[in-house]
Length: 629
Image 1 (cartoon, one colour):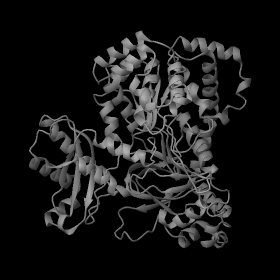
Image 2 (cartoon, rainbow, N blue to C red; image 1 turned 180 degrees about the horizontal axis):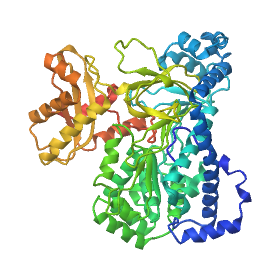
Image 3 (tube, rainbow, N blue to C red; image 1 turned 90 degrees about the vertical axis):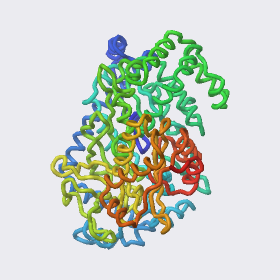
Image 4 (spheres, rainbow, N blue to C red; image 1 turned 120 degrees about the vertical axis):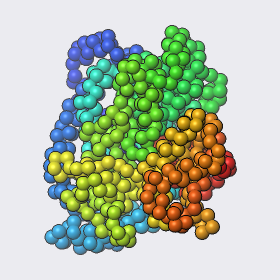
């Protein structure tokens, strides 16, 4: 379960579970069956889930205690982590090139490391990664790589990040187990009542190195993982064939929606990012009657059969549907007839939570649209959205020890996952790459994360900007994610970041709604730095007519940008930046962009909406759809 950025193998913690008393489990099964247990659970499934939750509950309690103890000694653990990485990889090609041996001879290894090693970006490692692609061993990691993790490409191109077995192991033992403990404390009834989760996972598309020995692709947990089949009793989508629908996210999401709707006692919806639950609920609203028809008939509609294009998979899916369900179809139609607000609670009266990353300006609009008068809002209260894991292709970064129900979280940095340094965002000289350590952070200041990880990256600029909010156990930093450096609009040093652009869009959205529009569906930006047209282009997808003259909309957008960023306003006043341009695109244009990015190899589980387009093919697609305002 959960929304990991690395592969999870929770079955390891089930060793020894067979010794559990079947009589006790049988009692629990019948006790819980009378509550809100998944209606499709067999006794065997319930037995498996009950043992899984009980074992994880015990193991996660130890993991939390271990995490807290590490946080009390954060600085020492960090020194030990760095020393171990340098010692392990000192004889690799990279370790020899950067003389790790000499660093290890110094009394203060942390000081020597920071003095001798450069602050790096991906291009620094590209030649070494190419050698790994050519099957050269001992290049960056003495233990070797298990894969090359392709980044999502939201900010720039798709980088290939080495990933080791230790990366996944630490993600599970230091991340997921602690998160399980947090969630059990927050929402015990979900685990006690044997409810299933709608796991929004999709088939990944992998490339391989020339020899075929090393795969390249998303390292998110998914159906290609070894052991994923063993988790199926926990999920509403019950068979592996339903997860293996390649190259068609819409058909795969349709099948997930169908199985989720079948289970009236569904307990959780989970995905890597909040955009996936948002898309699930959007699909149910637009295609709900078709889904109800398929559930009523007990088979897939011909158009979905054609899109899946695999007779054996269709047969397996239809067998798993279990025949016609006319009563459930009637309930679904009645729920949809009630409108968007409160839809989730009408479909699933016992839905406990949505689990996904929803922190930060990129994701919060989706969370708010669902919770504030949307599908998760009802007379019985708002269904919570919990963000629990902060992770990237480079590794586990932090975990939320007290996630808030609106999707916002403070993340506690994990002492044994990375070695952390911080680059102050308010430094006067941005060529100055002097970093500070965890104990030197200042309250409410913003920093770019600089990390040394478990797979051969050293003093690497992660590209994430976080705000320091305090310490856990007096030593482990608590941070709030702000934005990605690669998503900064920056023509004249004004540095309009994602939260500032989001604030400007909210102002314009409010103005549009005042004028009768249904508001902004999606947006992005383009940076034009030619002297003759030094300006931002804001691309908007609006629900229905704008209700405003083109010139008024463009003027309002520029005023909103000036309001959100005083430095932008200064450059506008001086005439160094021209008034922004607004381009409107028809509904569905951002879906076309999403499809293009998936075709390029980005996994749906990785995909984030880019608020600043840089790739020419992405810009060309939207501009071809647009009209200038």
